[in-house]
Image: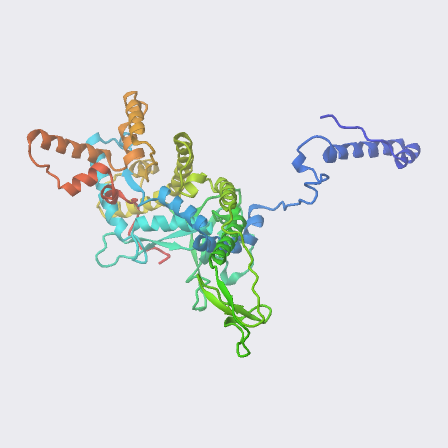
Amino acid sequence: MPAKLVKRTLLDRVIGYFNPGRGLERLRDRTMLSVYTGGGGYAGGKRDRRATKGWLPGEGSADADILPALTGLRSRSRDLARNVPVASGAIATNKTHVIGCGLVLNAQCNRDTLGLTEEQAGEFNRLAQQEFALFCKSVDFTKVQQFAELEAMGFGGALESGDMFAIRRYRLDPGDIYGTKVQMIEADMVCNPFHMSDTETLVAGIEHTRQGMPIAVHVTDRHPGDVRRVRLNWRRVPMRYNDGRRIVLHLLDRQRPGQTRGIPYLAPVVEALKSLGDYTDAEVRAAVVSAMFTVFVKGAPNPGSGPLPTTGKGSDDRGELAMGAGAVVDLAEGEEVEFANPMRPNPQFDAFVTSFLRQIGVALEMPFELLIKHFTSSYSASRAALEMAYHTFRRRRAWMVRNFHEPIYEWFMEEAVLLGRLDAPGFFEDPLMRAAWLNASWIGPVRISLDPKKDAEADKIDVEMRVKTREQVVQERTGGDIDRKIEQGNREAAAISGGAAPSASPVDAGSDASGDDTDRDDSNADETDEPEEDQND
């Protein structure tokens, strides 16, 4: 858009008369200023418009915008997750569809790089999954949870608090095969020693190089909000060993360059959810009061009659009358009752809350139907909502796998190879061979199907056209291990054709065929660890 020429003022004429060059410069500068304030560009960036002239947000870095409010965001996010059903449901829905009963390890070593036959690769993958199942049973540093529960806690904690930490430890307890342990650390426990101010290289408990690479975290020995209020002690935990192997896992969904700490999942809608919770409580109280219809009976004058029994002092220092469902109360002499109709239940409540929840669902990347677990739209609309949600869950699952599962799988594999329980030549010598042995996929909860028959027909067509494999169909629709399903199917077919009972028990057959938790338990873990004494123990 061309610049609009400005009119010369009296001062412009005077300056131009005595100094023409300075007058031209002044006119040029005023013309350029008009371009920025009233010319082209984005209306949202102008400061002379009525809607935006009072809107002056800060222009800080990621840490400058996040860290001052982070403590309040964490505590409010947790409070909403505890007390507001919609917030609690949104986090629980993410955990259910991203983690479910635990992501299932599907070891897939790269046999082309390793020079293995198909049978050798299959045997290694089978053994790796079996060993990882043993590792999962003793991986928790506190000896309370198994790996699947650590997954859910880590992911849920990252959603509620913004980030979560996992530290590699080593302790070989009686009965354990693997000594590598994982210690989960809540976000509040990583902070500056003695709550000192941030410095150039220490920000919010994370120590960086001057180039911005995190090199250590400072962890308290107990939660700062512990009711025991004992003296806190800090320890510095390096992020990596000298050879680059990871010690600390930081579950952080980084959104801006230079961002040190994570933002709670509910942060964009904290105020909206709080207002919705307060409004819902107020409507419920009003409806309860309206339901407490009380009958008052005014008797004949009685000099001995006293005031009505009350529940205590009110705000005006007078007694408050107790109400009850169907109660009949006598009035004292001279007392009158005026009934106030609260007009509850509010006929507009559902429409208003529905509209409000749609906006919240947009911010949380969760379709309205899934947010409130109520599908009343058409089949096409409901399926579209579920497909959109599935893509969000899949993205978060991939983030969780990269930042949590794959590093812990590597910790397991290190220890398994050192102990001789897995044979992986070249694992410690060649990074390419190491990556080939560690190659794996993680299977999570399958997508929701509104019409299984239609989905099965579509999958059949895709398989026949060879645009989708049977393994993909199993992973997306039923879960479980396709090799076990094929083996079980062959046993059942042989049993039926031979008229004999199946070789597997009905329980085993049913669990294998449906791909339920029996399949998941056998492969529900990562491979990674070495039995050296961790310097952080």
